[in-house]
Length: 50
Image 1 (spheres, rainbow, N blue to C red):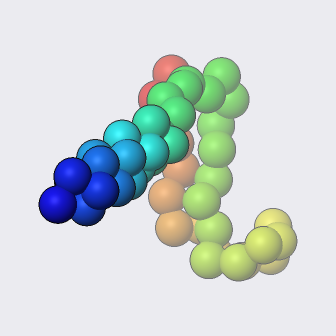
Image 2: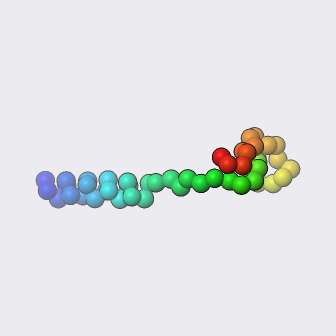
């Protein structure tokens, strides 16, 4: 029982430590497109500071 509890807590702590997102901001306009090139349609444009 102790081994199962230890393993569960270990898995949860690893998930919490490495499951974080990175926040940041942009300084130029960023276009989110439907594909990898500039020929694809723009889905959304993000303004600087977002």
